[in-house]
Amino acid sequence: MGNPIENPYYNIFIIFICGVIFWVASINSIKFSAQTGVFVYIYLPLISAAMVMVLYLLSRLLIKRYSWIITLVGGLALLTAGIATYFNYL
Image (cartoon, rainbow, N blue to C red):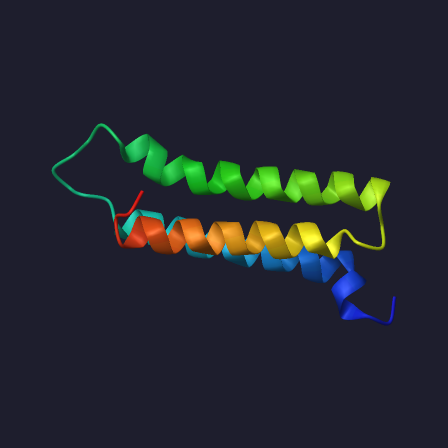
């Protein structure tokens, strides 16, 4: 495992960091007057990051060599959703 892109610890760490960025962006975009959608803003990023992590671990079992692609696509999706949430595009 000389290549860090194939190391599962780096990939899980990247998914975790992207999930935290999405979560912080969602928390910062909560409107204090609206109490109905708070559940979505708080738990959707955590559920999304957990789903990407489970998908990565499943792909790690099936295709070890190219499982980093799941990390790349999942991380970009989480970052895109975090930016869109922060600027209220979602």
